[in-house]
Structures are given as C-alpha cells and as structure tokens.
Image 1 (cartoon, helix red, strand yellow):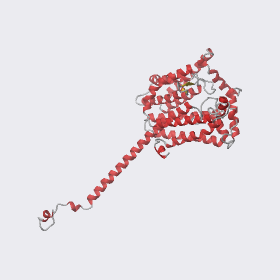
Image 2 (cartoon, rainbow, N blue to C red):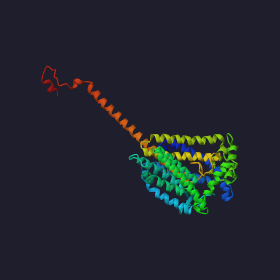
Image 3 (cartoon, rainbow, N blue to C red):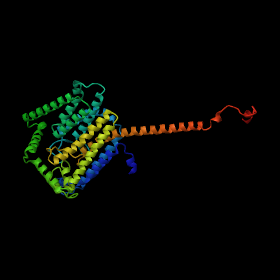
Image 4 (cartoon, helix red, strand yellow):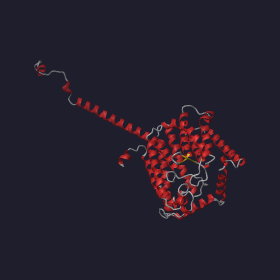
Length: 429
C-alpha cells in the first residue's frame, strides 16, 4: 500500500478528500438502494447494487490514476478534436436516448456490446470546459474582439448547450453558468459577457415559445416539466416532484442531530431516486445533522484545495482548467443539497462521488485526474527546483573546500630556495 501511495503524484489533499468521499458513499448507497431492489426484482436485496457501486468507484480511481499521469497540456489539443465527437453523441442521444432507472428524461445511450448506459452530457461538460480554458489562454496572446470570439468560442458553446437543452435543462443551466464564471475569471470583457447573458435569455424564451407552438414534438417534451417544477416550487402545488421533496424533508427531520443510524432509514423505501438525486436526504436521516455537515465540509475542503491548485499553477491554461473542472463539481454538490432541503426546485443533479451511477462517477473522476495532473506538474517543477538547489549547494561546498585547502599552507607552493647549497633542492628532487 505504501508503494502504491508513493506512486501517486499531485496534490495529496485532493487525493485524500476524494478518497474519503468515495469511501463514505458505500454505506448510503447500500442503504438507499433498497427502493431500486424492490422495484427491480422484488427481493429488497441491495448487495448487487453495492457490488455495482464498488465496481464504478474502482474504475473511477483507475481513471484518475491513468489520467493524472498524462501531461495536462495534451488536453488542450484533445478538447478541440473531441468537441465534434461530443456533438455526434449528443445528437444520437436526442434521437435514440433511453430512460434509465425510472427517470423521466431520455439522457442516456447504451454502449454497444457492453450494455453500459452512458450520460453524454457529463462528457460534453468536461470537454467544453477544457475547450473554453484553451480559448481563453490562447486569446491572451492577441486582443479579444467580440466578432472573433463569437465564431471561435460562443458558437461551439451555444451549439453544445442547444443539444443538451431539450433533455436536460438543469445541466444546460449549470454548464452555461460555469462557462460564464470561467470567462469572467479569464478576463473576458464584461460588456461582452452581458451581451451573451442577454442572448441566452432570449434564446431560452424563444425555445419556450416554440414549445407552445409544437407541444407534441419530442424536442419540446420536457418544457412542460420545467414549468410545472418551477410553478410547484413557488406555489407548493402537490405533484410527483412535491412528493419527492416532502419525503426528503421528512427524512431530514427524522435524522435530527445524530441520525437514526447506518442502514436504518425509513424514507429510503418511499423516496424515488433515493440512491442518486436525493441521497443527501438519506445521509441526513441516517447520520443526522452531524453527518450532513461533515459531507458539506468535505466538499468545501475539496474546493479549498482546488483554489490552492489554481493559484499554484504556473500557466494560465492550468489555472483555468482547475477552475473550469473543479468548481462545477462543488457547485453541483451544493445544488443537490439545496434541492433536498427545498431551497431549489427539483433538478436531477447527483451528488458527485457519492450518488450511485457509472457515467457521472467516471466523468467526475476523469475531471479530477486532469486537475491532479495540473498539480503534479507543479510538484515536478518544485522537485526539479529543489534538486537544482541541492546540486548548486553541493557544488559550492566543493569549491569552498578546494579553496580552503589551497589557503592552508601557501609556502608549499613557493619557488624561493632558502637552502645554503643551491644544488640541494635539485638533488633532493
């Protein structure tokens, strides 16, 4: 184990907090999967779901380890080549997307010959954030003009978001907000950001108006769900989402300070998506306010390490990659917690590294691998500087020792002959 840990490069704090979140996830997932077990095969045996989650976590850490060994600047070119591939996958998802685990949106595709479901929007978000970081770091070399940025930056971003929007409004809004945050940090002109925000609001309004004109279209099938969620959140009108929120609040209230104990949740048997979207409510019910705060603190500590890693990065691209991949992860966790306590409408966002699900865990781990790769580069530079300082110090010691030995007996190097016999010096030699 020590040898394995010694091979891990990069920020050890990020490694530690990620490992703690992953280890903690097993108990809530094992407990909250009973609802899926009853719905799936009617036995209530959650061991299979625990094994599946264990496999997802193990594969996720393999992804982190493999990605963190790749120099992060390679992803600068990869993002530009991967974006068209992402568009193809998103279009395929719109046409052939499937419903997984009772969700009411077709956001997944089945990987051929493997049978694994994959949510393409998670991959799209990672690729898009790296693409934006690439553009912002490149634009520092030349002044930014709005016309050029529309074609080089906002057109690819808009096309990606348009492909995600029909099936997943919350993910689209989250990605758009994080892109705006990233371009703000990258010192994109504020007046241009205002124009982009206004354009986004206008397009969303136009999209909703089109849904009214074509209510039976598959593309606009989710608009009614968005409207009902916002309306029910503001008016407390009872429906399926309100049922989820009520059960989540009952679970949180039942947990009190110290919780009912691991595996003793009651609402997990009634709360839909208890192992994914509403797993935080189950955590608070079983581990109480203390457990809920500990999870929140772990995410905040992880955010702190992201800030430190971004500050230490010696390139603008590295700084923006850490911000663009790290901050959305924490923001998504906050949204998940806020939904559970009814601070926000139901969004369908999972709790990173804790909620069950393969593609969400793997894409989170992929993003973490890139972040750790940035911190690994800084670590390597620091080690090289430390080694160079040691070599310089050793060389200075050798020079000082040589000079000291020359100054010990300077008469040994005198050519003056003080002997009485002039030939004695030659004879002695």
